[in-house]
Length: 159
Image (cartoon, rainbow, N blue to C red; front, side, top):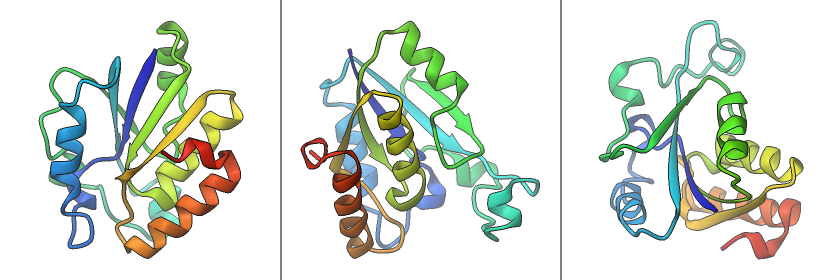
């Protein structure tokens, strides 16, 4: 079974660099190419090390954590860490016998990167959809991280 995992597609991450992601990801969701789709949402808190140690204060408001498209009735997993590889996702993958995971979303240098490595290290086939992952910083950073991910999980998994 093929799963599309859309990581942290939230208002917080839409900016001048990533604005085209809204239409891109909307089209991807509507493409009917995948057996199932899961969205994740990063929810920050003042107790979170990302807030306390990394000094990042995004995703603290209801508006900032909203997904900017209709998620239809697809599953949404909330998380407070970089990785989406948590108990809820693990149980879902096992219950639904999912082995092929196609990743899209934000930010390639944090949550996408960490999740991809966690899934890879747990023996899932992880494919990074290079045209559907984004960096809020720059296209150059995105390309650098794609190259690193290709080295880490195999270039044939960057599609």
